[in-house]
Picture 1 (cartoon, rainbow over the protein chains, first blue to last red):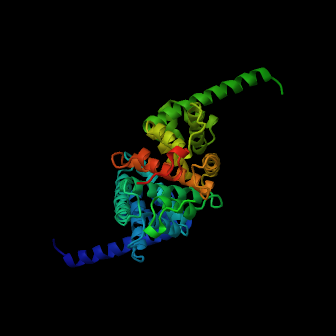
Picture 2: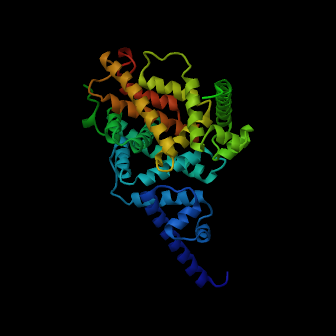
Picture 3: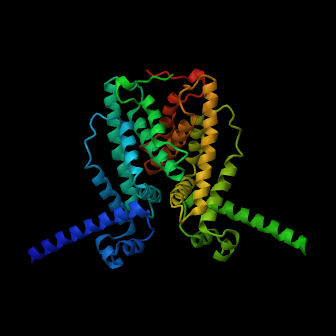
Length: 205
Length: 205
C-alpha cells in the first residue's frame, strides 16, 4: 500500500545488502571457521550487530543462510549427469578440501540440528537437506541397477544413506588428522559395492 | 610432604566426588542432551559452578571426561573377539540408539575438535580416539584378509576409516530423521565389502 516505488527500491536494496553480507560471511567462514556469536561475525565482517539483526533474525538463520548460499554457488558447477552416487560425493569432498571452514560450518549445523528444541530452524534445514540428498542419490543407485552395474538386491535408500554418511564422516576424520586419512581412496572402496558403470563392476582380487 | 594421611584421604574423597559428578553428567546428557555452559550443567546436576570448576578446569574438560567415562562403562561389556569391523560398529550403533544424548555429546565433541585453536584439549582427545579406533578396526580387517574373507587388495586403514565414518554419519542421519534411516541395514551393506567370515563372503545377486 502507498509508496510502492520507494518500498520496492528499499526492498531490492535490502536484498542486495543481505546477499553481500552472506557472501562476506562465506569468505569469513571459509578462511577462519565458524565463530560462535552473531556479534562476533558482525565485528569480523564490519557490520553492526543491529544491522545484522535487521537482515537475519538469529545466529541460526545466518548460519543456515550462509550454508545455503554456499551450496547455491557450488551448484553453478558443471552438470553431473550420469555420475554415480559415490563419484558425486567424491567430487563434493574434493571441493571441500579447499574450504575447511565450510566443512566446520556444516559440522556446526548438523550438531545444532540434533538439538531440535534449541535450534528448530537448523533442525528443519539439515533434516530436509539430508532427505533431498538421499532421494537424489537413491535415484542414481536405481539408474545403476537398471544398467546392471549395481546388485538388484541393494536397497537404494540404504545405499544413499551409507554413501552420504561415509562422505561426511571421512571428511571429518580427514580434517582432524590430514596425514592419517585419505578421503578419496576410502570412498573409492564403496565403488566396489556401488560401481558407476558395468565397466567398473566388482573386480575384487 | 607433611600431613600425608589427610591429604591422601581428601585426594580420595575428591576422586570419588569427581566420579560422582561424571556419572551424574552422563545421566543428564543421556536424558536431556548436551547443554552449552558449565554453569548450566552445574545447575542441572545440583553442583555449584565453583565446585564444578574445582573438579574440571573447563567445559571442554568436563565434556571430554564425561565421554571418556561413558566409554569406559561401555567397554565393561562382553569381549568382542572374532567380530568383524563392521559388526563391531553395528553393535556400538545399536547401543547408542538408547542414549541419543550421548551421540549428541559425541557430535559436539567432534565439532569442537575441528576448532583446534579454541578447543585444543577436545581436538587432541577426538583425534587420538579416531587414531586408536582406526588402528583397532584395521587389525580386524587384516584378520579378515588372513582368513581369506576380505579381498587382499583392500587397504585396511582405508577400510577402517570408511567403517567408522559410515557408522558416525548414519547415526547422525538417524537421529535427525528416525523414520527415514535404518542404521543397521545401511551398515550391513558394508558387510558385502568387508565380510566377517568366509561363509559370509560377497554373494551379490
